[in-house]
Amino acid sequence: MTSFWNTLPRPIIGLAPMDGVTDHPFRHIQKRYGNPDLLVTEFVRVERLAAGEMKLLRMLLYDESQRPIAAQVYGTTPAAFRAVAVLLCRLGFDGIDINMGCPSSSVAENGAGAGLIRTPELATEIIAATRAGVADWHNGATAWDLPDLPPEVAELVEMTHAQLPPRFQQQRSIPVSVKTRIGYDQPQVDNWIPHLLDAAPAAIGIHGRTLAQAYGGRADWDAIGRAVELARGSGTLVLGNGDVANRIDGLARTRAFGVDGVLIGRASHGNPFVFCADPDDPHESMQGDGVAGSQFPLLAIAAEHAALFEASLSEWPSYSFHLMHKHLRWYARRVPGARALRRKLIEARTAADVHHVLEGYRFSCGQPERVA
Ligand SMILES: Cc1cc2nc3c(=O)[nH]c(=O)nc-3n(C[C@H](O)[C@H](O)[C@H](O)COP(=O)(O)O)c2cc1C
Image (cartoon, rainbow, N blue to C red; front, top):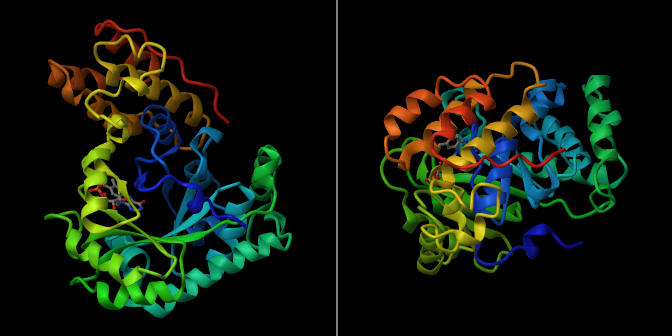
């Protein structure tokens, strides 16, 4: 069975997973206007998802335009990874990515995320357990077979499964990949990466910082290049990550460091055009209503994003339009009078408020497409 990784263009220019950012509306907008080769969800804690915490399913929403899409998960309990793998296969994801890179104390100090760099045996067990869950699905397991999942959650998962296009309901290869860092306190690529390679993940996304560095300093691309050397001939792809500004920068780094592709994170905030062939002249990407003719295409996209955010998330528990404000601030960075505009935008309480504020910028707002 062919893995989706083998169908991607080379080099791969993907969107990095970001908690609180890469939700369904953000991914939809990035795909529509930038068309990254790969999307990944925000990370979801397996222990909570396996226990059926309904609101986590919101983080796993996507629509068909977003393929190929991998779901990212984190945690420390192999049995929960196995159960969640069944659930993610039933939801139709194309791949499962395991987070072994998050530096946040609430994650890493509990041994998850980058904490797994310190417990490599557990990291191996988790990869194996996730694969075992994919095998359970191949053997016919459904959400109803997961013992800790409340019936209402199993029902929602199975209803979603029934609505998938037939080819995504069928058995197919669901590869397991890992996203990690170059080390915990110090770079330790020479022992950590071979350890991961022994477990043969389909791909390793590697952020060129240690946990201790969090997001400070510059990403160490020489260390990423070393990971490429170690992975050569293994069959595992290596995606470099950290400080990539846009597609052109990403292509230069693939040539310089030999990676199979890159993941772009923060540079995509408020600007899907970073994925375009020419990020400064993204005319081929501006097909949305009101975007092509706009003097400020990113503001037209902001209005569309706000409408999609409200349309797709407002029915979910603990919905708040406040979560849209950071995106609005990012979209408004590069326009004349940005500071005053940002002030107005963060007072918006609805998508209609956003539309109203942006109308002064003389563009017509696109309507969001209907999404699942
Ligand atoms: C707000 C934020 C949230 C993030 N959440 C995740 C996450 O859920 N999973 C993950 O693997 N990495 C996460 N990351 C790390 C990014 O995927 C990426 O590794 C990092 O931002 C470096 O890439 P960049 O320089 O292109 O932003 C997050 C980063 C940011 C800024």
